[in-house]
Image (cartoon, rainbow, N blue to C red):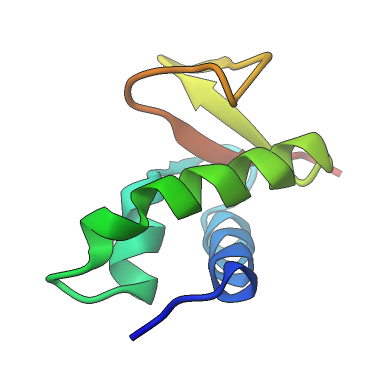
Length: 86
């Protein structure tokens, strides 16, 4: 099963909207939703890449340890996504 960027993008936006502006989601939640129990780990790079795009476009914040990450492409370690307040 191949997962496209569009479905990852849609799922990230759906999950952060459902969670609300005060809460975050883990990229692995998205990977587990669009992938399978065997493939979700392989999707993590794609999910993080699409998350970076959404952050650059102003739809979400990428956070680490509760703080907004200035350059999501360069961050290492666990991150989370949060909806940008309108």
